[in-house]
Amino acid sequence: MMTDASSTIFQDKIDQDIRIEPKDWMPDAYRKTLIRQISQHAHSEIVGMLPEANWITRAPSLRRKATLIAKVQDEAGHGLYLYSAAETLGISREEMIDQLHSGKAKYSSIFNYPTLTWADMGAIGWLVDGAAIMNQVPLCRASYGPYARAMVRICKEESFHQRQGFEILLTLSRGSEAQRRMCQDAIDRWWWPSVMMFGPNDDASPHTAQSMQWKIKRFTNDELRQRFVDICAEQVKLLGMTIPDDQLRWNEERQHYDFGPIDWEEFRNVINGNGPCNKERLAARVQAHEDGAWVREAALAHAEKKIQYGKTA
Ligand code: FAQ
Image (cartoon, rainbow, N blue to C red; front, side):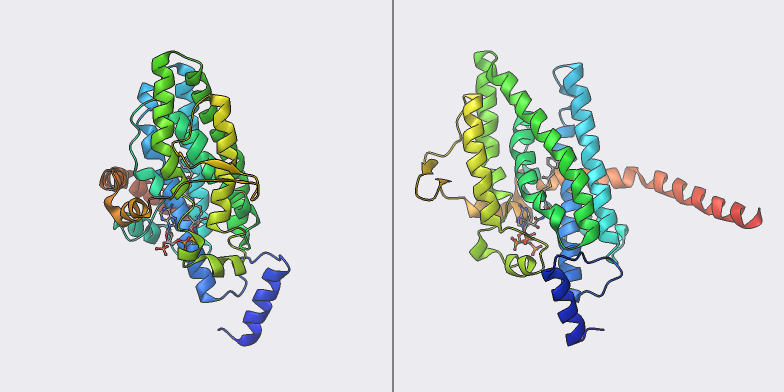
């Protein structure tokens, strides 16, 4: 039950950077916010496997294929840690999966774009994993223990993902004219959707202020987006490529890059289910879940048998 005293103790713990653990008292709204964010994050990892899985069979070499399989497998692992972290808050895995499959739960907008060429594997690694790391490193210090601890390993793996992506683009950028064009085209298509990954501007973000007070978020959407732009604007020079934004310019006074306007209408469309691949992605997830029903049934039957055996033994 919530009392003024318990909510004061709770906020004091947050203010002193003492982690909140599953059995500690927490306000209902804190629990709900975490379930929302962690489950959306888990869904993003799982749906995020699909655009890349599309290229496993067409990777250009055995080395690239093995690396891509490992990356996609890591993403499955991230989804599982995150579902487990969300379960500690009192929601079941089945409920979360139902919310995803019924379209009730969101997942990151970025995974609703198609992967058209091999260079997209590089652009996803460099830009999408790059944006993910920028957002997720501060989550290692999130106030909720199980989420923060899951993020430590996830971030280590994401940083490897980001490097493999950059290396794919670097190789293409030193290749033939056609490869260089493919590289630039992938950057052109993935840049703005990656910038949008950080979410709405701070003044249009309903959850940021409260999540900052609870130290779930340590930085605002715009602060993280700005850091991402600053880093990418420098890294793109190593590739000899360009970022598709003619307003991208170093601002000496701000000590940051200025950048052009974001197409928020496109963002709203994508998060409301009308992006280029939303329907395809959800259909693939639902199909995979249905195809896996026999595995779940067999695992349950096996577990029940073990319990029975344990009782009679
Ligand atoms: N897409 O008030 P805010 C990855 C929604 S993992 C869709 O700012 P908040 C790994 C937001 O949910 C990528 N929806 O919300 C990988 C809210 O809707 P709601 C995922 C978005 O929570 C790489 C509404 O807009 N990462 O990439 C998006 O304070 C490569 C208002 O927004 C995480 O989930 C969006 N981009 O801040 C895998 C990190 N942005 O729930 C495979 C954890 C906002 O009220 C390949 N999450 N919305 O209906 C977070 O840090 C936060 O939840 C934010 C949003 C920053 C995403």
